[in-house]
Length: 314
Ligand code: UDP
Ligand code: MG
Image (tube, rainbow, N blue to C red):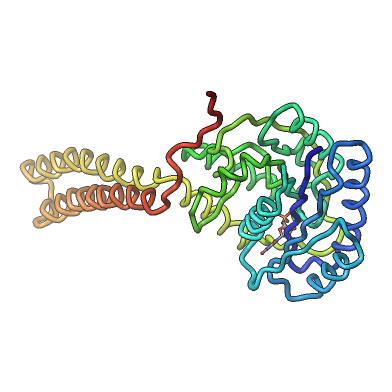
């Protein structure tokens, strides 16, 4: 049987945590009884430098419950880093697979049965995908939609309506371990791992206790992080814009010269207009070229693995 580690990042979650622990423990016990998970499975709570009583609560739970374990980060490093810390610890402890789930249980713990079934069928990554966004405000729905569209447009492979509720096999975790980048955007990285993957639909609920840790400001910076750590396309767009303006400026130039010869131009206007257009275009173009090199440096510095071997047959 397979050792399953649930990885639960928690940041100031003291209101939500007691109920989460209860529900997840019940789920895990059921899965152990049903033979879906080994008795060595664990709930791994990651305290992301909380300022409230979250860690005290986790400690207490771990002392009382052999199925629970806890990891405390020294600082608040954000959801993605907390999650990675948990996943890598689970890998270290010998997990066969991990399921990451938020501490507010907005993601349905019952969907994990389907995750484990898919895993047993041989899938390495199982994405939890939201059935609908009914529980979200119109604003969140709209911004989320724009975000996924925009990411796709910029060439990052993201799974639509999938947050960080997913199962990863040991093999997928080992692949993830090879990604050494500091600006972590798991939703973008994990699809680049490849391997056999599938998705499971579930209904996302509203948060039951505590407040969201992702207000608009953090959401925007998260989205910007996603774009800039995945795509150098914005740099290419600058080059293209520069090229376009340079070409257009040739027409502008002709227009200005014709006006000048026709005597319709105020003295001095032609020279100013021509130089503004042409120089503006050339500057953008040069900026874009510099950007292209920066883009190369960016991907080199990330030093991501160039390939990941899925299988080797002798
Ligand atoms: N979280 C974290 N570190 C942070 C912010 C959030 O570990 O700096 C955790 C949080 O405790 C929760 C998960 O990340 O388990 C998702 O956060 P939240 O539910 O507030 O985000 P939302 O669902 O509103 O997007
Ligand atoms: Mg939430």
